[in-house]
Amino acid sequence: MFSGTHRVFILVEYVYPNSPAHAAGLERGDIILTINGEYLDTNNYYDMYSLPSYAAGLGTYANNTIKPSGETITMTATSFIADPLIYDTVFAINGTRIGYMVYTEFITGDDNQYLARLDQVFDQYKSDGISDVIIDLRYNPGGEIDAAGHLASLLAPYSVVSSSSTFVTFLYNEEMQSYFEKREGAESENLIYKFPANTHNMDLSRVYFLTTYYTASASELLIVGLRPYMNVTVIGERTYGKYTGMWVIYDEDVPPAHNWAILPIVMKFANAVGYTDFKDGLEPDIISADDLFHAVPSGNTDDPMLAVALVDITGAALKSTQGVEEPGYIRLENGAQQIRRNLFVPGKMQKTMVNTY
Image (cartoon, rainbow, N blue to C red; front, side, top):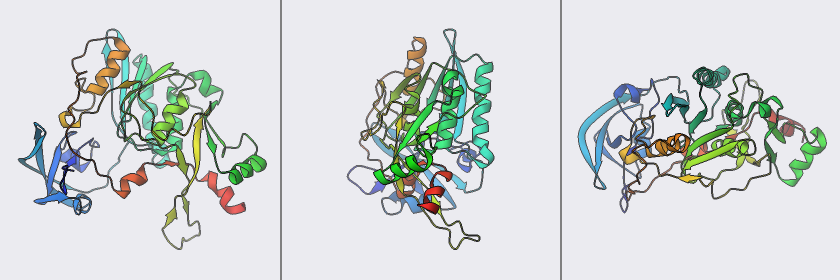
């Protein structure tokens, strides 16, 4: 949003491969100023952005000013596989081989297809002799705990995964906590989420995460859940601070009488040593600001945040660890974005409670 006005622009954080935006040539860092020839403002931007097809007028940024570029691209909505692992590569620097991936949301997919994709990438990392992994979560708002647990089991030391160590614990209000402890015992899956078995485990001793304020929920769970077991380095900006989880409660009648569901927040999570309540977010170990106004493609070492991680791992001198310009614009959020910033726990957890309590 332009500070002091109602005018809005869209700044592209990432583009899904095989999406209409990708086919149209839209790239990370691109600016959208108009849709169907109409300038965006606080009243119309979300409705315009959500249209099934449109022509997007692009802009350019220079000297803290955004102007129309004269370029227009057209896009039409379609169905495609939106794998949250949108980019991965391997760097070979000073004899060190480093895996890097951009992961945009914690979702498992139909028949766990997105988890299978993660397994394939980590198998390739092992074949390539990777010693370190950088997980880019800077735009990841959260999602399903099963996806977070799966990624954790790929990264953690083998001894942790093979022994089914505690990944996180769930803490409820006094009544619900007592209910699960008495009915199901201290090891109940409603109280403890353990590292799942994973034959694709990398057996790492350290891992790097790139974060911003928009890194939330399941992303933060992954970071804090791994910290008791390995060296976790967070690079970037302070995270959002969402340490709670919700159940999705829907109509289980056959056929269902409606298509509504409720999503109550019923718990908070803590790691194996009890760390929780990080309401102000997770502070980075190394501060580095995201620079979307001078964005480069994912995996480009001119990206300041990625460069800082590579320098910390290898000691190599990379050119783009410079400071980032702070433009005077305000970021807007809508309800759909806020709903995505959540941790969804498996349906099996609430069914006992709903049916018998």
